[in-house]
Image 1 (cartoon, rainbow, N blue to C red):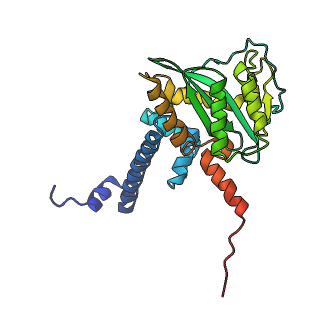
Image 2 (cartoon, rainbow, N blue to C red):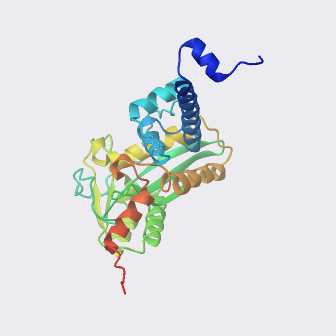
Image 3 (cartoon, one colour):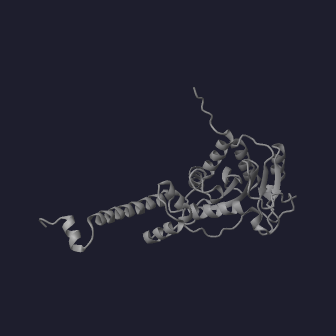
Length: 288
């Protein structure tokens, strides 16, 4: 319409021109906020909810609460994947010697390579089962070593341990704790080969009490998250394909990107970097 201006329309509607432009700016900011939240959500392939995503939004400069992020996600029709329960595959029917529970649910560790927790889970493929064994450092919740195999045997856990030792520079005095559930003291971890391997590397063995799943809740939680994020709902044609997906999730996403509440909402790798940086002390600048 000719002759119609913003100021004339505002005057007709009984609003100020400055108020109108402020409203337009808020609308644009709100749209940008929702677009940024969607981008962050898909950056984590629909894996995370408001408790984690709020920290990503803070990094983008938005001051908002977890509750606000939750409302925005609901409005966008977005929700995180929910993991289902899974079963243990370790052997509980054996007469091999077991180790005492030295960890005693002390899941807070102040240094890297002091306590590693470990367990085995399974992934279905068209070729058959693929078994995954992980070594998790309680300090940062980082997966320091892992191994897959079509067999669930002592070689699987030995290979995962050797992987962790090589990557971490062969630390000594590490407590290696295997978890228990429903009378589990898995024969893989009780095998002579694994016990000798620990002894040779000056490591200490610890095992959960029979029938107490909470004695290794951290590793349980990792498998629960893993299954919900990349396993459930997926169909793997081969074990090689499943292993490739596990590599991407563990090495690229979980260790480096995914925030963990126990780390002050930092990723395991970022938490370790922060720790090592703090050990360097303040930087001293020379002055002339």
